[in-house]
Amino acid sequence: MVTGPPKNNMLHGLDERTASIYAPVQGGLARVDDRLRSLAETETSPVQPLLQYATDGGGKRVRPAITLLAAQFHPHDEERPIIMASAVELLHLATLIHDDTVDNSPLRRGRATVSNTWSPNVAVLFGDYVFATSATFVCDTNNIRVIRRFSETIMELASGQLMEYYTSFDASQARDIYQDRIYRKTASLFCTASESGAVLGEAPENEVEALRDYGYNIGMAFQVRDDLLDFQGDPSNLGKPVGSDLLNGVLTLPTIMLMERYPNDDLVQSLFQDRENDTKLKKVVEVINDSTILPDCEQVVQDYSHKACQNLQNLPDCPSKQSLLDLADYITARRR
Image (cartoon, rainbow, N blue to C red; front, side, top):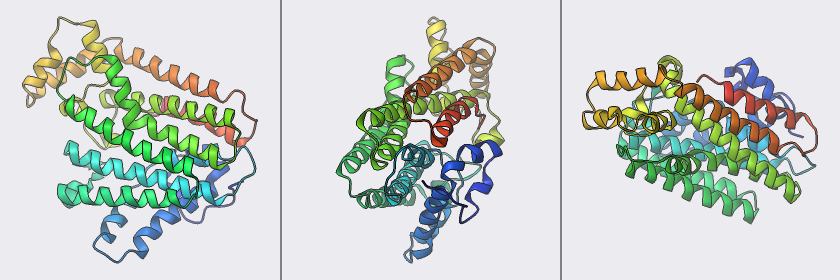
């Protein structure tokens, strides 16, 4: 089991609830953080300050935690899940760097993005570097199934970003397109985090499948919650302004529900045609907040979370199983 005290202060930046959920793998997460930190410490090229900046950016380490927790159900080689968890976090960082560049986002987690601090050109090249680095980590697991799944995930992440780009400012999108997009952009990596942990943790195939399904449902819940926060969150906590997705032409579940309920209202289309009009943005946000749309989206989050917990029902009881159950509740309730 990956236990023991953390080697650094990674867990100290977490709230008490998150630290409690991560308790069964806190030693493993500290080793993941050490691996990420060592990348910057051992690099001597112009990439070094970029690595330092990216790996010091905080974050809750949800995805690597899932990898480590999913590996804890059976005796296994402890090192390989830690390598995989490091790769998962690096892949996540790479997607954020590219995502912020495409969206021209000034802030991420309350501080300037890589593209804003250096330049979009540097950010694209650096994102590619981090993608490639994550792939070298996965190769060190020596597991062809995990390597293949990781490669497929990179394809899904990229195709999800392309879907978002090509459908931006298109008010005709249906809910099924949105669901496919958020699977590719978000839930696919959660699936890979949980599935790879189970595989490297030497779980039997039925448990691997159950943990993969858990990753899917927890990933979908995570993204819908994120979409909700874009309308109801505190900008100081989110690190981005309220309504930023809509300003970037990205239709999320609250906006899609708004258009489904008021098909003859052109609030969203009108905003897309006059993107600099703050009054129109405030009107869309106001209508969504004054309706039952946000509570109904909350129910969607709850439904995905409930399915995630059901996926774990037949797995062996252990502290990591309880942490995965608690993580589902935590993601459902998070406010940033």
